[in-house]
Image 1 (tube, rainbow over the protein chains, first blue to last red):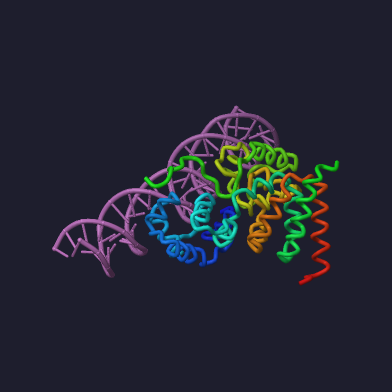
Image 2 (tube, each protein chain N blue to C red; image 1 turned 90 degrees about the vertical axis):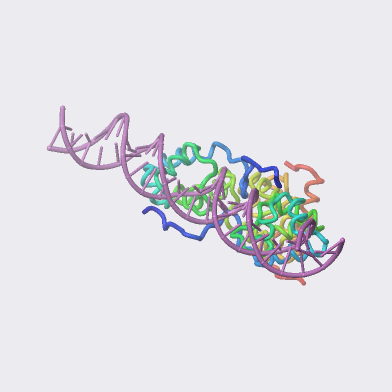
Length: 135
Length: 135
DNA sequence: CGGTTATGTCCATGTACAGTAAACAGAGAA
DNA sequence: TTCTCTGTTTACTGTACATGGACATAACCG
């Protein structure tokens, strides 16, 4: 009897997942005129699974690569879809791990800032990059 | 035959994982004078599993909460351990998802910057926060 | 020496997550 | 009616993240 033996408090890197995700996908898919089978085929998943996902009958949302594909097909922002699904965009983990101390520190400092403030930071980062390494 | 039926290209939000992780944990644990069983108990996992982890005999490293606990017990930076394990620190997904467009954009702009440059950005973020919302 | 105690390891097993296959029910067209 | 399209349900699969119990080895104690 080592741990608390968690029964269903599982979480990889995935927060709550709004029930919005499945509903949103279905809305956009039908708006685009895709049938469930056709869309599933294009995304590379089974119709069964897509049906489950759209009804929010799944414990966890699809993996990053499938969400990416959905975004492309629907003409939606992949990052928005990732957020709805409660997942982190595929490329971010590597960026964070490249600077294991500084990147998390930056994110925590940026927590709660407005989109406008974040945009300013982003611009400054881009500028730093253009100016090259000052060391 | 819908998908490519991936065989071992699985990845939740976890990149390669250096074989360093297990070795590092063992080195630090023994340096601290913990036995495998004692440390496993304190972390809240089985001795069996800890043994596997330290030998890098596991496919994926422990989950975020256990890595966090290890860091505390060993007096190591949790963020460093997360990076070694190929995981993202627990609190970051929520921060990212709170601004699904702006946070990923900031991270991508900050990609490749030096620790010094990142520190400057972090300081500016903290300053913005203290000055309150300018909207 | 012989028995206990502590070390780490191996093998079998369990449960959740991400997904599939096959069969099904309803609507519409021919 | 039958054919075909729609979406849905039930049961199953493989991998990830673990656990339990038995095991071998070495050290300690009388």
